[in-house]
Amino acid sequence: MPRCDVCFHNCNLSEGQTGLCMARRCQNDRIVCDNYGQITGFALDPIEKKPLYLFYPGSRILSVGSYGCNLRCPFCQNYTISYDDGLTAAKGKATYISPEQLASLAMSYVPEGNIGVAFTYNEPLVGYEYVRDAARLVKQEGLHTVLVTNGSANLSVLQELLPVIDAMNVDLKGFSDRFYSSFVGGDRQMVMDFIAHAAGNCHLEVTTLVIPKENDDPEEINSLAKFLSDLGAAHDVDIPLHLTRYFPRYHLTDRDATDVDNLFALADIARKHLKYVFVGNV
Image (cartoon, rainbow, N blue to C red; front, side):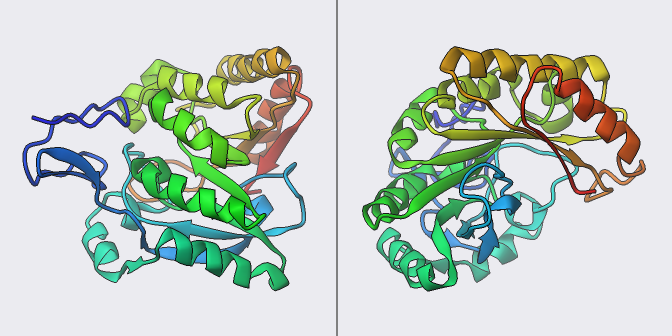
């Protein structure tokens, strides 16, 4: 039985079976990328929306997404293309855009201020083959490439992508194993390793959505910021941290939005270690 080796789930799949991410499938006794080139949405976004604040600020970037995700965040913003019931409809509405077509589309938006392509919206790494192939062509056109990801992938996947990715924003969802394993169904160490290997190899910014009573402990934020600070020092770079405000969403509607004063207080804690700390969604 073939095993998918993209992430920590290591799904063993029988013929025709789809992995937990809903994007990888066993076909002819091998794992294939079922969502290759299947685009569910694209838009010309401000680069700050990724969020990337220190990578060509003030520019715009063509943002594209497919379907599927390897986490199960109860607060997901894009659940209709990630893994919920709406995924079937999303697949039906997806439009195939080849890597060549995407590179050409990106070039067509250059007169409107486009600097390249951002792979985002769903989790791009579950279809990393498309990211790799398309990003290579986009860069050949002289444009930039951005990856917005949860970082839940084996380092072999990252190594394939690093040569063709200029900037990343990695969603470090919290800094406790409890939060990762029981709340979002992830593996914190895998994400930390991903961030550690990306640092110094491309422009890197990190985002943490601050959720009341879940990952808003001051000591946790302090430890998270120190991790990024130590990592940045090792590579002689400053890694920006975005602390963003949570609003009730999807299955997580049993608590209020993040208190703004608390969010700013946590940002002050992070600034003890980091030069760049940004507060978002306020």
